[in-house]
Amino acid sequence: MEPVQDLWTCFTSSSLHHNHGGEARCLEIFAGEAAISRAFAGRSHGVLRPRDLRYGDDLHDPAVRQEVYREIREEKPDLVWIGMPCTRWCAFSRINYTKQERRRLRSKEKDFLAMIDEVFLLQRMNGKHVVVERIQRPRICGNSLRSGDGVRTSSPTSSLLTCAPMG
Image 1 (cartoon, rainbow, N blue to C red):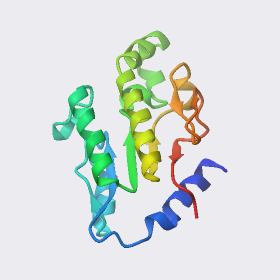
Image 2: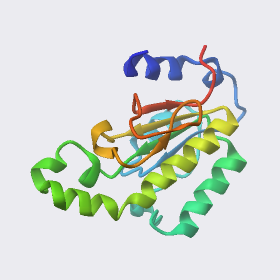
Image 3: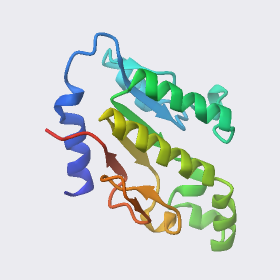
């Protein structure tokens, strides 16, 4: 499937349409202005507290990441939306940094890639979904994420990592 079709299927999936009775439907990581959380809350869906340095969550800190993992295990949000920090991972980083500078800066953020891997695994175990924003496929080569079947891959096919059955 094409990434856009995957995304549409994720949001129209039956697992996202049942009444949760106040349960968490969304957790936003690297939330920035928390636009995704606001959108879910605006539709009266349960939203977990967005995680971002702006809200006091230093995701470089292993204790903070462990707290996020605990929250995912306990609250089981339908969707975890991860918006990688734009400064290092978006296509425009080529304008601001040389190839070597980007490589050095991104290596300092490898803990973020490990966190994506762990979040994906947790969501897969829960039968839920993950969306990863701003990661360019060629940009993460040499690092690994889990593919949909749990096998490590260095080239994900989409920025939407689905963990639950579709339909």
